[in-house]
Length: 302
Image 1 (spheres, rainbow, N blue to C red):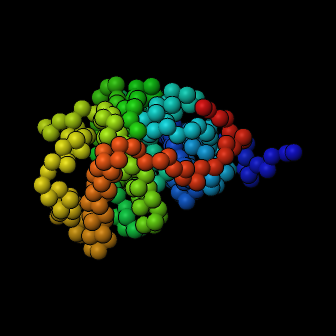
Image 2 (cartoon, one colour):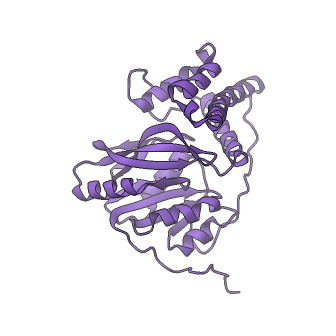
């Protein structure tokens, strides 16, 4: 019986102006795929997707745009990203990590392409701005997302993986928009999975993404806070006030207020789950989140 391939199956990605391979991982990201691929068309030299057996149209959409797709069972974020960097047939001189819910501004595209062509350093950090309920928030994070191919690996952790660059990086001007979930139902579902993974890693005593240090870089400070958070009095109220006042999300009105409250709740959920595992002496049962079957149109990895 002949396979029912999607329209456009067999086409290849048309190389863009930037000498970079964009790599994404996915599970049920059909709601983002059209927009993120439209954002990359004409810019990225190559686009790769490592899919964890999505049950929606993620793979169909990616193939229709000429993306190089493979599938592999998900074991953890660090593990999946290291697999991608190790096994994908990347030929571009630069590699970029991108999440399906992120979009590059035109300014960022221009500046990144110029910086990659100059090739003066080994990697680039970007300013990522959070969007919530369809509105931009004044929440920005400097993150390493682009590096010379072969010069980076990821911390081998279950969740909150961190890129480990072999070399020097510099910032590039422009905005990376993070459109965090299409609605609250999706957002809460995602945070439920993330907080369970974080709690499990904490109870097992897994190593953190980077060495915690109160006086180190931003990633080291976040890891220090994560390790010592449960000792801080009034911690959930302080998280809420930090985002509302110091991060300035009050400027986004009620949307910002809701987001700050939910961020404090995420910390609370994580601590409650840690407590539950310590009291019961067991981890939560393994859940299956709408996992699809292997798609035989693309290469499968164990």
